Image (tube, rainbow, N blue to C red; front, side):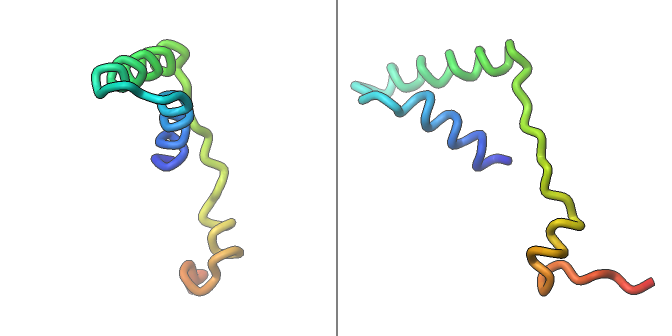
Length: 64
């Protein structure tokens, strides 16, 4: 989820040339304020069952 958020901020803040650090900071803060105001969330749909199917050797099924 962190990588998704980084991508959103990268596209939102770095889509145009940035002249200086202060401009980048203003863009970042504006996007952060907008996303917080809209209560933007990320719905994570990759479950542990999905992980067991796709990454079987890393997520073995526990024997009970």
